[in-house]
Amino acid sequence: ASSATIQGGALRTYPFDTLVDSVEVLLKTDGRPLNARIELLQGPNNNKEVIELYTEDGFDRPFFCILETPGSGNVVRIVNTAPVEFPMTAGVVPHSINEEMSSSDVVLGGDLSW
Image (tube, rainbow, N blue to C red):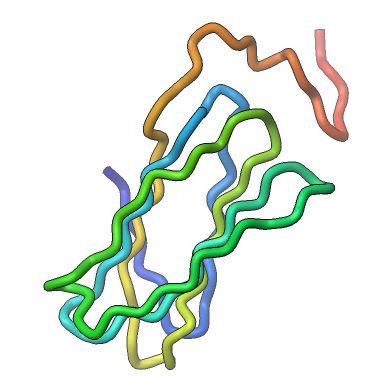
């Protein structure tokens, strides 16, 4: 699984294809405190869902969850709300894929090239 370091105060976005029904989120540190906000944005007109979390030791107690992401326009945004001296590692990857849905079913803000 791919992971990325997010410095304190920084954010990273992970857009997902329509075919992705759920995503796995893993947040950890090297033993320092973990302060983070996970935001799930689903389409342009929906309210975002937010998880705020804190753990004293992100190595002994990392955070893992699976977020349901049905439909189109899903973006997971990870914000490191800790100071700059507390980086964290984030991994956000697809968990389940909807094989039956065609990725051309919904097109938001674009056109289909034939």
